[in-house]
Image (cartoon, rainbow, N blue to C red; front, side, top):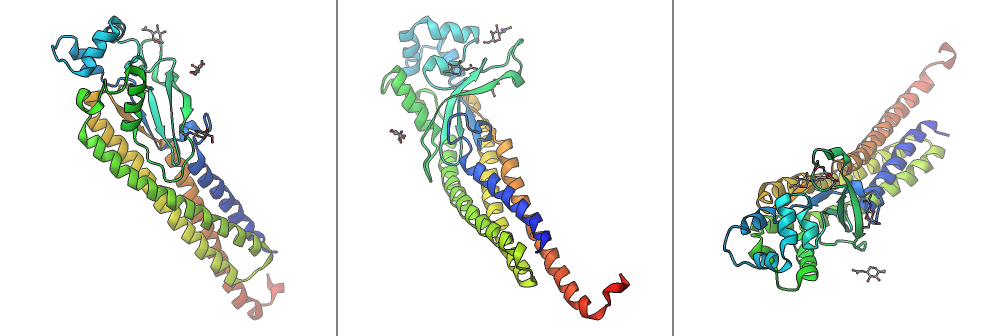
Length: 301
Ligand SMILES: *[C@@H]1O[C@H](CO)[C@@H](O)[C@H](O)[C@H]1NC(C)=O
Ligand SMILES: *[C@@H]1O[C@H](CO)[C@@H](O)[C@H](O)[C@H]1NC(C)=O
Ligand SMILES: *[C@@H]1O[C@H](CO)[C@@H](O)[C@H](O)[C@H]1NC(C)=O
Ligand SMILES: *[C@@H]1O[C@H](CO)[C@@H](O)[C@H](O)[C@H]1NC(C)=O
């Protein structure tokens, strides 16, 4: 029995669970919703455009909706109490996970005020899309679809009426490619972690430097793949949020990077590195033992 193998078994098991959670977080309504890769906050979408349209004589689609729907939206915007998204029939937030997205409203309010502080605001998920491998998260399309449903098809066009920035559209395209790569790498990584786990369990019963070496290599490979997947996911979260916050300000759209997701994925990655380091020590110690045993008399120790 090699009891030192129990340490990597624990590390690899933990890593396996965490990597699995990265992939499946948010895939059902209310399941680890806080672990989104990136969350779009559209609660104030078009706020400035709508606000200005009061005084301007623009005849854009959005202005005509306000005329049509009447004072309801105008009042709430002037009061800046309700969130614009809800008035327009879309959601406050859209959170991207690796296999689906969720949407919902901020509760108790989207915008912090004197009585509701930022830490009091929680996401209330109303729906999640079906779990799909290699899916495309396209908030522009989702929002446009919801607008069509709420105010009528063809009445509001995000690009024309809200001046949806082209930079965001291009950013979405780039992130979609990265997200697919990340998804594939997470799947491969989970496969490697599974193999590493089986090897580690087997190595509890079969001692030897060769098995330690093999374990080390497989763990390291899993670490490498999960590390690249984590790096891509981190890039999506950080770069995506910065692009949206930079260009989305004018249209009242912001984004938040998924810090909890990043912690999850990097802890899973780090555990694999630790496991491979333990195997590395095991390998070196095995060599020492082998060299030492015939040379020295155990009774001296
Ligand atoms: C959502 O965005 C608006 C404006 O972009 C901001 O005032 C508000 O604090 C954000 N809400 C949350 C919960 O992040
Ligand atoms: C803050 O928002 C909450 C929820 O919408 C509302 O009930 C409350 O009256 C607001 N407080 C102030 C001071 O506007
Ligand atoms: C969350 O949303 C559901 C349905 O939209 C609603 O019934 C529920 O009261 C909301 N929860 C909170 C805490 O606001
Ligand atoms: C999601 O899955 C359910 C059941 O599997 C199905 O009825 C529904 O049509 C699917 N929704 C979409 C948008 O694909």
